[in-house]
Amino acid sequence: MAGTRELLRHCPLLLPQDRHGTAYEGFVTVQGRDFHIRILLPMDLQLKNARVECSWRLKKILHGYRHILKQRLHSCPDLVSFMVELKTVLEVALKNTQDLHIPWPPEYYSCLVRDLETLGWNRVAYVDTGLTTVKLKAEDSCGRQHLITLKLNAKYPTEPPGCLVDFPVPFAVSWMPQNSLIDIYNQFLAALESLKEFWDALDEIDGKTWVLEPENPTRSATTRRIAIGNNVSVNVEVDPRHPNMLPECYFLGADHEVNPLRTKLNNNMHLWDPEISLLQNLRELLEIDFPSRVVLEKSDFAKDCGICYAYRLDGSVPDHVCDDPRCGQPFHQACLYEWLQGLPTSRQSFNVIFGECPYCNKPLTLKSSMKKL
Image (tube, rainbow, N blue to C red; front, side, top):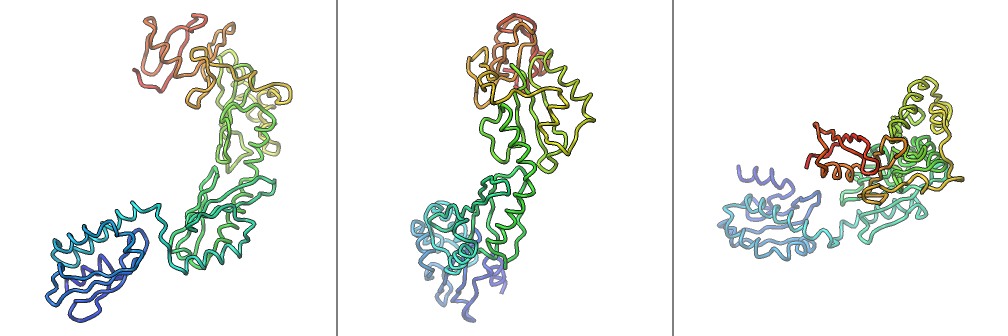
């Protein structure tokens, strides 16, 4: 009796078929999937003489593990131990055959196709050959194109699909077993509209200013590094939930260039008006006109590093500038750190290194999070 209870604990869907405990039939559950199995034992209940019957798809998965299972039948002391071993082997087999398409229950496919037809094939951007990954497309009220990727499992629609979206905030799906893809799609559309003001603000920045970073911003990106002048820029981080509020601003450039900008921002902060656009607010608070994309080229601001002579280094751009107004040479932080480390006249205190500019030899200070070499 204790053995039966233990078996039910490990395999609750595998049930005895007779009072002698020589026949068991049901399902073994691994990775959220149920596999049909039938085990027939001799009257002496010796596992080594047992016969295991299973569905064709389980047989296909375990094809390369038959010798291991035969060994386990001979070595395991009882059926409970064998079922634990079988589930372990099945876990490994499923991981090694993840690229092999194994059909799921017919009900899954009929339900999925019915949902896609109800949703409309014109909204479907992609379906993989196994019908387990679906990409749906949508257009928000401003004409921006968006995609949602759905990863379905065999228990759909009892369990919701995984959802991948290019959002700056988490996308949580509300789901019940009676729901369908149209419910996820409607929640997706509602989420798009909730982010409209955020994307409007960043689209205006992307369209009217020179954005130095990120080079190709995604819809989930919340920061923009905007060119202000030669080797001077501001990095703004916008709150997706409150895009009309004052963003976090971090100025990059020589002190004699950025200190006046910091002062203006602090003095004019009270003038921020949530009724006008983020970009217009920045113009008014900083009392500047951002360089126009119509008049200037990005190369006017994208000056190469004075050490490696490249603009991009492992995705980063020059972000440290010599403070001497007559020099103003930009450097990658990594390049400058390595350069200063190699000079015998440089000295370091904690994460601050003191040295000289490679171009003008004026005193230069670099605060770095990089570990000392």
